[in-house]
Image (cartoon, rainbow, N blue to C red):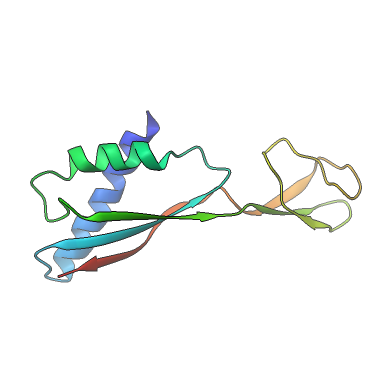
Length: 113
Protein backbone atom coordinates (compact mmCIF):
# COMPACT_ATOMS: atom_id res chain seq x y z
CA UNK A 1 0.00 0.00 0.00
CA UNK A 2 3.03 2.31 0.18
CA UNK A 3 2.63 2.87 -3.58
CA UNK A 4 -0.30 5.18 -2.79
CA UNK A 5 1.93 7.59 -0.86
CA UNK A 6 4.71 7.31 -3.44
CA UNK A 7 2.24 8.06 -6.23
CA UNK A 8 0.99 11.11 -4.34
CA UNK A 9 4.61 12.32 -4.14
CA UNK A 10 5.16 11.69 -7.85
CA UNK A 11 2.08 13.74 -8.70
CA UNK A 12 3.15 16.58 -6.37
CA UNK A 13 6.56 16.71 -8.08
CA UNK A 14 5.06 16.55 -11.57
CA UNK A 15 2.41 19.21 -10.93
CA UNK A 16 4.94 21.54 -9.31
CA UNK A 17 7.41 21.20 -12.19
CA UNK A 18 4.67 21.55 -14.82
CA UNK A 19 3.38 24.72 -13.14
CA UNK A 20 6.90 26.19 -13.00
CA UNK A 21 7.28 25.46 -16.72
CA UNK A 22 3.90 27.05 -17.46
CA UNK A 23 2.71 23.80 -19.02
CA UNK A 24 -0.93 23.11 -19.65
CA UNK A 25 -0.54 19.36 -20.01
CA UNK A 26 1.84 16.61 -18.90
CA UNK A 27 2.48 14.04 -21.66
CA UNK A 28 4.98 11.62 -20.13
CA UNK A 29 6.64 10.89 -16.81
CA UNK A 30 9.75 8.71 -16.62
CA UNK A 31 10.18 6.96 -13.27
CA UNK A 32 13.32 5.04 -12.28
CA UNK A 33 12.85 2.07 -9.96
CA UNK A 34 15.65 -0.08 -8.56
CA UNK A 35 15.16 -3.83 -8.86
CA UNK A 36 15.54 -4.31 -5.09
CA UNK A 37 12.96 -1.67 -4.23
CA UNK A 38 9.56 -2.95 -3.25
CA UNK A 39 7.60 -0.69 -5.61
CA UNK A 40 5.16 -2.20 -8.09
CA UNK A 41 4.78 -0.52 -11.50
CA UNK A 42 1.19 -1.68 -11.85
CA UNK A 43 0.18 -0.34 -8.43
CA UNK A 44 1.76 3.03 -9.16
CA UNK A 45 -0.06 3.14 -12.51
CA UNK A 46 -3.37 2.28 -10.83
CA UNK A 47 -3.03 4.98 -8.18
CA UNK A 48 -1.69 7.48 -10.71
CA UNK A 49 -4.79 7.13 -12.87
CA UNK A 50 -7.02 7.82 -9.87
CA UNK A 51 -4.95 10.55 -8.17
CA UNK A 52 -4.14 12.51 -11.35
CA UNK A 53 -7.79 12.82 -12.38
CA UNK A 54 -8.69 16.48 -12.90
CA UNK A 55 -5.06 17.68 -12.93
CA UNK A 56 -2.67 18.64 -15.74
CA UNK A 57 -1.14 15.17 -15.30
CA UNK A 58 -4.36 13.34 -16.12
CA UNK A 59 -3.78 10.98 -19.03
CA UNK A 60 0.02 11.27 -18.87
CA UNK A 61 1.95 8.15 -19.82
CA UNK A 62 4.10 6.61 -17.11
CA UNK A 63 7.33 5.04 -18.36
CA UNK A 64 9.26 2.91 -15.89
CA UNK A 65 12.97 2.25 -16.12
CA UNK A 66 14.33 -0.61 -14.03
CA UNK A 67 17.81 -0.24 -12.58
CA UNK A 68 19.80 -3.40 -11.85
CA UNK A 69 21.26 -3.78 -8.40
CA UNK A 70 25.00 -3.60 -7.93
CA UNK A 71 27.12 -3.95 -4.83
CA UNK A 72 30.71 -3.99 -3.66
CA UNK A 73 31.99 -6.32 -0.95
CA UNK A 74 33.39 -4.47 2.07
CA UNK A 75 35.79 -7.35 2.83
CA UNK A 76 37.40 -8.06 -0.55
CA UNK A 77 36.18 -5.24 -2.84
CA UNK A 78 34.55 -7.60 -5.32
CA UNK A 79 31.75 -6.03 -7.37
CA UNK A 80 28.65 -8.14 -7.90
CA UNK A 81 24.89 -8.09 -8.53
CA UNK A 82 22.96 -9.02 -5.37
CA UNK A 83 19.57 -10.66 -5.77
CA UNK A 84 18.30 -9.45 -2.39
CA UNK A 85 19.41 -7.39 0.60
CA UNK A 86 20.35 -10.68 2.31
CA UNK A 87 23.03 -11.74 -0.12
CA UNK A 88 26.64 -12.78 0.43
CA UNK A 89 29.67 -11.90 -1.68
CA UNK A 90 30.12 -14.65 -4.29
CA UNK A 91 33.90 -14.19 -4.08
CA UNK A 92 34.59 -14.40 -0.33
CA UNK A 93 31.21 -15.14 1.30
CA UNK A 94 31.11 -11.96 3.39
CA UNK A 95 27.66 -10.57 4.13
CA UNK A 96 29.05 -7.04 4.48
CA UNK A 97 28.65 -5.15 1.25
CA UNK A 98 27.79 -1.67 0.06
CA UNK A 99 24.79 -1.47 -2.22
CA UNK A 100 25.75 0.90 -5.03
CA UNK A 101 22.36 0.93 -6.78
CA UNK A 102 19.12 -1.00 -6.90
CA UNK A 103 16.89 0.50 -4.20
CA UNK A 104 16.27 3.91 -5.75
CA UNK A 105 12.99 5.34 -6.93
CA UNK A 106 12.71 8.80 -8.48
CA UNK A 107 11.12 10.90 -11.22
CA UNK A 108 13.76 11.09 -13.94
CA UNK A 109 12.02 13.37 -16.45
CA UNK A 110 8.70 14.99 -17.30
CA UNK A 111 7.50 15.87 -20.79
CA UNK A 112 4.98 18.69 -20.96
CA UNK A 113 3.12 20.84 -23.51
